[in-house]
Each structure stands twice: as C-alpha cells, then as structure tokens.
Length: 275
Picture 1 (cartoon, helix red, strand yellow):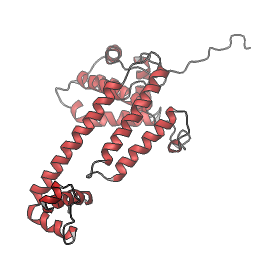
Picture 2: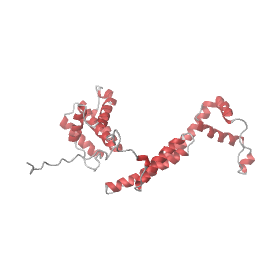
Picture 3: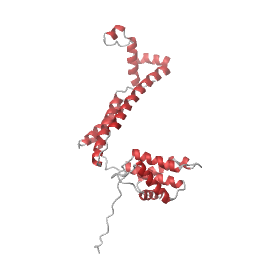
Picture 4: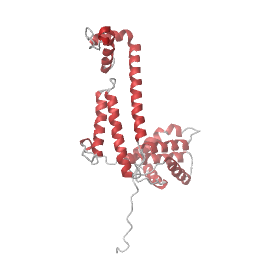
C-alpha cells in the first residue's frame, strides 16, 4: 500500500486524465472522478504497481532534490566572514535560521513527506529567529539545567580528537611524534577552540589518558570509545593506514564541530602572600 500522501498525487493525475478537453481549455475546475478514490487507486496500483509508483516517486524526488539543492547552495553562498566572533555568531545564526525556514517550506510543498517534518523545521527556525532578536524562545526552555549538562558538541570533539591520537598510537607512531603530527594537521584543517586558538596536543593527550582510565567527561569518553570501536576492524588490518584515518577524522571535525571545544581553564596562581 503506498503512503497516504501518494493518493493526493495520483488523484491529481487521474483527474487530469479524465477531465474533458473543454474543461482544460477554459481553465474550469476539473470534475472529480466517479467512485471511491481509494478503491479505484488500489485497483490501478494492483495492475501497475511497480512502474507507476516508481515513476511518480522518481519525479517527485528529482523535483525535491533540485529545490533543496538550490536552497543549500544559496545558504552557502550568502554566508559571510566577519572580523569578530560575536559578529560571526550573529550572522551564522540568522543564516541558519533562514536556511531551516526555507527547507521547512520545501518540505511542506512536497506531498511525499509527512507534515510533521516541515512543522519541526519551522519550530526550530522560529526559535532561532527569536534568539536573533534577543527574544525568549519557549523551545529552549529547560536546556542548561538537565541531568546531562555536559553533553555538548565540544565534548564530542574532545572525544574524537583523543581517539585520533590513539589511532596514531595504533600505527606505532611515537607519542611525541603523534602530538606534533596532530597539531600540524589541526593547523592545516583550521580546527580551533571556541576562541579561535590552536588546540594543543598536550590537552588531547590529557583527555586520552583520562578516557583510557575510564575518567573524564562521560560524553567525550562515549565518543572516544565509539570512534575506536567503529575503526576497530580497519585498525586490526595488517596494512592499516592510521595517519589517513586520523587525518580524515580531523578534517571531519573541522567541518562539523569547529569552534566548539572550550578554552582551557586558567589556573589562579597561588597567593604568595598567604601564610
């Protein structure tokens, strides 16, 4: 049985085929087909299920893909670089909200997608627009004071960077060489912390050592373990290329999780006058 939204598409096709030529020429409303639509469609699909459904779905997906591509292309071309982090954040927030809004509209105009998909994107876009105007957004209520306050993008980046170091060690690279290699690759990829500063390999080694002992941020530890589990088969291969795996991981993080790692905490120097 095809999805319910497909009936609306097929109904339009059937009405167009059954309408008299005069109605089309005079731009008059097309008459409804006689008989229960669902029963007639079931009979039609019984005879031409595969060719008909595939043809309709193929055309709808081509149209949807081209529309979404234009939206994504426009968003990328309209994104600008700003001098300060604050200005960049404000600009990116507006561009992201506008992108979600346009994607929501395209989803709503596509009959094969459920209505809830467009509604979901609309809600998130509206919340971001509210944030952009410094207005309170109910969608974000409750965040920041939950049972898992440390499940952040920065923690994910920390866990995966620590996994990159461990992957290099699987390749028998010395620890000092692996740290130098990491810093060089992060510099090439442009992977930095929230303030735009280079992430030191010393910090990554600290995270890795903690995760191996089962301590440290739980969320980061989860992604550290997951990354090594996902690559376990490749790491066990006799001709493993650990540098290539680590390099691809760093480039992925630079693309998807850049500027998410918090700055290192500044330690307050001891009070030399304290007795």
